[in-house]
Amino acid sequence: MKSLWVFGYGSLLWEPGFAYQERVQARLSGWHRSFCMRSIHHRGTVDQPGLVLALDRYADSHCDGVAFSVAPADRDQTLTYLRERELVSSAYLEKTLPLALNDGRQVEAVAYVIDPDHVQYCGQLSLVEQAEIIAKAIGGRGPNTEYLWNTAAHLAELGIADPDLDWLAAKVRALVSDPSFG
Image (tube, rainbow, N blue to C red; front, side):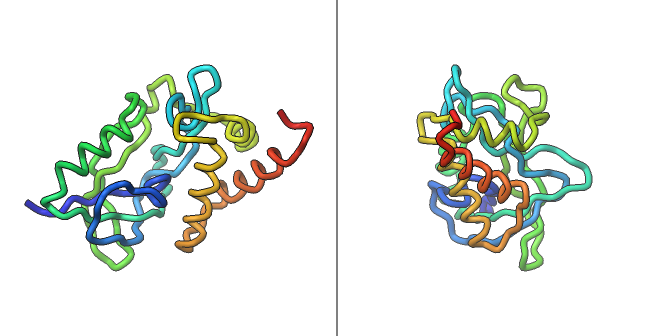
């Protein structure tokens, strides 16, 4: 059995939650990192959904993130863990997609992408609307702001540019510090 590759583009960057033998920056073509999924469990509630990142399909785009290589002996345990974490609702779809690792290797990796037909999909929201939702939402794993700021900080630490996420992080900081917001 060969190693399992997992693509991280959001919270997996800073909290993978599984053992891995290698961590390499990678690019996934044809997909875009986006706050296009309403979170009713982890970063929001049914009454006040938050937003979490998902991979949304866009033909001429790409998403830079991290590929984790999992040892064959840990494959089944890792997949079980990821499915329990990521497939809380059916808004994410588990796909095996081609990744280009920054060191030149090409691998197939498990990635969690948005189902655009799911009720939690909200790819039409403007950045301003996203910021207002993120600034207020809190779910079972904590404030939505924490999710945004941790992801933005880890992307910056890795040297991965994401102008939309940087804009959102700054806008949300301004909103939560504004006493008239809320």
